[in-house]
Each structure stands twice: as C-alpha cells, then as structure tokens.
Image (cartoon, rainbow, N blue to C red; front, side, top):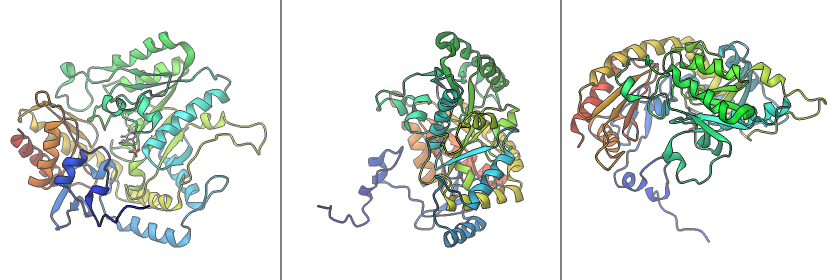
Length: 440
Ligand SMILES: Cc1ncc(COP(=O)(O)O)c(C=O)c1O
C-alpha cells in the first residue's frame, strides 16, 4: 500500500522548528542563493541576515567549493572511515588541528552540531572510564544553553521548549545558571562587565555531586538562545574551577568556530583552552553536512589500549568524515584563509555593534546584545502570547523588507556572513527598525 502521489503538495513536508500550519498557508520559499543574498522562486532578492543558519560564513554559491565537491564526486564518492581512511580526511584533520588551541590536535568527525555534542559527551564519559574513574558520569550544562536536539545535547541544553515534550532527559545531568541578568546587563556593548561570579555556581554543583562530574559543556557565546556574550572573565573562571575539580571543559563552538568571533575559535578570542571543542556549520560553509570534536591530545592518549588490535572508542557514524564533505571543508578553509575571513569577522563585528545599538528606543525593544559578528534584539512579548511578536517579525522582514531574519521566541538574531559589507549590515538593521515599527 502506498499513498497517492501528492504532486508537489506542500502538505507532505514537516519542517523543523516551524509553525507548519501557518507556514503552509503563506510559505516563505528560498529558491536560490548567491553571496549575501537569497532569491525566492519569482527572483525577488532577499538579504540573508544569518548566513543561512549561522553556517555560510563566506556567503552563498562559492565556486571553489562547488568545484571541489564535483571533483570529489568523480574521484571518490564514499569510503568508510570505520577501520579505513581516505586522503582528504587526513588532510582536513591536520588543517583543523593547526587552527585549534595548542595541545588540541585530535579530530573526530561526524555530521552535525548535535552529533558533535553527543560525541563529545560520550568521549568525556569514556575518557573517565579509561582513566579508572568510572564514577565520573555527571554532565553539566547551563540554563539557556543550546547543544542541538539529540538526547545528550537536549539534556545538557537549557531551553525549556526543547525539553518539555520529551519526557525524561539523560540521567545525572545538572545545569549552571544562565549568564544573562537583564537587570544588570541590559544594553551592554559586547561582553558585559557583570557576571564572572556566575561561574562560581560550579562550586555549588561540586558540593552537591562531589567527584562524580565528568564534564561541563557551555557555548562560549550562546548563539541560539539569542546571542548571550560571556561576561568578562567568566570563561577563565570556569576553566579554573574545572581544572581545580578535575572536570573536563567542553566548548560548544558550533556557531563560534571559523571566524564568527573574529578568530578561528572563541577559545582563542578569550584566551581559554578547553579540553574539547565541538564544531559544525562553518566547517563546510554550510554546503555539505559535517561536524566534529577536537580533543586535547591528553584525552586521546588516555584511550591507548593494551593490544594494538583493540578498538578504543566504540562510536561513530556511517558518514563520519564523508569524502565529499571533507572536500567541501578543505575548499572552505582555503577561502577563509585566502580572504582573511577570521580577521574580517572583527570588522563585521564593529559595523554590527555600531548599527544594532541604534535600535535602542525602537518600539518593543527591551535589550540589545552584540558579540563577535552576532547581535540580538529582545522584543517585549505580547501579553499572554510569548513568541507571537517574534513570529510576526520574521514574516514582516521576509515579505515587507526582503530580509531573511532568524527569530527565536521574541528575540531577533543577526549574524551576517563574514563577507558582508557595511552597507549590508546597515540595510539589515534599518530593515529590522522598520519591522519593529510595524509590530502589533
Ligand atoms: C552551539 C550549538 N550546538 C549545537 C547545535 C546543533 O547543530 P545541528 O543543528 O547541526 O545539529 C547548534 C545549532 O545551532 C548550536 O548552535
């Protein structure tokens, strides 16, 4: 038994993180992309305000990536990485290791940010077992953290809407408090002065859980919850406390790695070296799914087996280190290097910071934050209908202002590609200003 063909009926698709029924009554279709712009099926040009979904850092339609992908398809379309390897994945791991913090040179590949996070949590648990400290099984996330939608990442994540339909989370998970305190930080420019002390909550968790904590995972800059910059000194303090209590520190850099922070990694920007870094999104400029975990050499070394035929980590995905994704990633890293995009992130940061804070005083604006080449505007929620104004903002931006905006709840997030010019940034912010002016 099969269903009758639906004949290109939009009803067949179930979109992620979308109000599907409303969407289908008035769809926002993106048919083409080039540089800073998308185009709808009728050819209307739309400014891309979030580099896809934080991933297309070099803009859309980069010919060098297209060529690398098509050449790779002709040469080697797939090869397993369980018990085998191919040349591009070896080269790519070395290239990533070269831009990672010192002493972090072991790269495990997967296919998304969610997989990268779950991989890092599994490595943390397996590491302690390999070290003879199998009692370290607890994982600590943070309120308002976003670490993807698989069970591990969802559990350490701290966004209530992402939890509430899914019953029990992973056992043994606890959370640090959010770094966000509107009363003390509202309208701060860049990293807020207040809040380094919020890392000290880890001492309370250690007092509660003793030596059973395996790892702490945080986003250095929390992007998906609405661009929460780390308070000045917070990450250093967290590193000190993790080291003091023998806890692994994982930086989830799925958004922040590859130039968004004006540096290869947020770890480098803040001068704090974690034990693992997760990455995804920007690694292939969003062209082909890929993610991964960069582990400190000492973590990898702890997995040495007594017998050389024994597998040390029973984990991986069929498409871990896919050759076509690896080819896309190598071409992407070449573009980032040749066009100096990591440094250019600093320039986009300055333009965005100047422009976005001019929205203070616009209708419904209750806070504005910026950090790296990213910014967010919090809108006052409509009475009794949280999320409604945010939803209206996406639609007005798309249909009235020719802008593709990212909104989570009642927060507008801006994160243009790192190839953006000042005029793109200003157009984006002016469009947001007009959208705010028309919200009901
Ligand atoms: C910090 C962070 N971790 C993990 C993820 C999940 O990545 P993916 O959607 O590729 O699974 C995201 C996605 O936005 C993210 O921002």
